[in-house]
Image 1 (cartoon, rainbow, N blue to C red):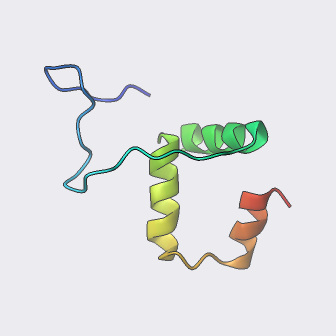
Image 2 (cartoon, helix red, strand yellow):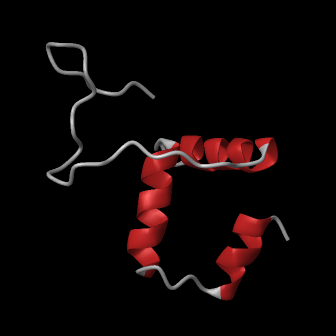
Length: 71
């Protein structure tokens, strides 16, 4: 997936919500799983995580916990 950049070469914002740069400690298995899932949906990992939280308003159903925890 190719992300849009402005004339200075910086990535453009997807919407009006500014995103801070964050850091996560993930296992390689989890990082790969996020990569596969996001690629299948045409997203980047950050957008996949944003969509999950937005969709469930932070209240994840039990099956999601199983998927995210690999159980």
